[in-house]
Length: 515
Image (cartoon, rainbow, N blue to C red; front, side):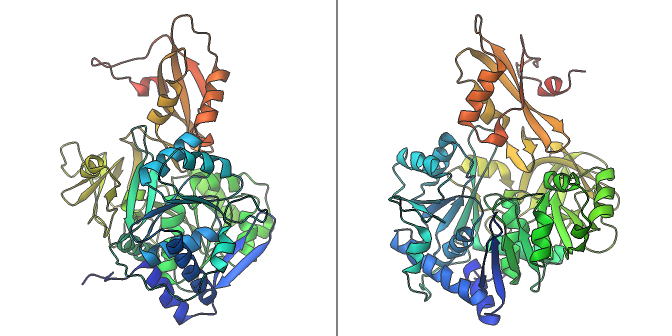
């Protein structure tokens, strides 16, 4: 038997609920500073009620439902309840357009959508465009509007365990991630892989049972889940959940609720550094803030001067589930580097022929992994992409890096055509596909431009058909109607033609840097 055995995420939570029932598990503070909180024992009952409600709604073991809303206690209840009955939860970006959400709902075969009033219209439109959705349910809503209300529905259920047979190998979560094609891929995550990643993260970050983890990143993103939510569950730590990240509220939340851990990206760190000096913020108890994507040396210095030395750099992706590279917990952290390989993962840099690279040589990061155990099980309904990504026991990430003589790994670029905007993966091909639908557009290429706050932002280069009279405003307005806000290009450049290779491939690096 391996170290996970037949443990499930649901079972792990139940163990801690029995071990320290009165300990505070979840604190949720909304944007009006109104708080709700539950002990482990209280939340165990809510999970049981949620699991029973899902079964009543026809969501059984192996079946899929979607959560399309900002961060809320409902997400936590549903995520653990999915493991309790072996169902599959699909968290989606609540900012998505109808077209984006419809694809995910239809592709995932979701039977149910749990949403909130703000994104309700989009959820309804997506549900109507598919044949799989049987109901749309509202969370956190007082006004009657014809939809079932999640909190009211679960309050009517029994608080006892539903006793559904489940397994550590059950897929219980599916996160859709941008790829190099215009369609996102559903990454299949099992109980076993999420527990494994959580155990590894806890040891590499120092996360422990007595901690309280501040989660302000969006829960539909793997960062909030794999840097914070699942590791906290695995070690029985408490969590403080915010509806969204706010640079003016972050340290206040941490101080009010005595948080000791947090997960961020480089962009939120820059937003915090851009705030006016506030001496009170130095009195936080955050022992460690994990983050992805490096800051500049000056920004690291400013962070230490303003807020203390509490940063730990890491690298991973949804497909790796855990974080294979992290700054050392003890000794010099060398924050410009992504970190060193952590106990539990084997990481290598290889060239195009698969040969291992020497120190200083740039190559692709690959991570050893057993599908469904230490890395993702695969991509939903996409065997070809799964086989291309996981080969001979190694997960090929598409990210290029190098390592030094001390074993620190440094990010170089993405071998895949991906733009990283404030921690969000943006596929240029998805933007290009939308712009090509505009009457008058002959061709388009989208590239990522460096940005001081968000790391990269998309810019569109467009070739118009003869006699077309489009301007940049019309193109950007069309994108705003069909793409989530963070995918909309910051600007449009009109061209007569594109630089191309001998076989006709657009040389995007020349568009990005014409000099």
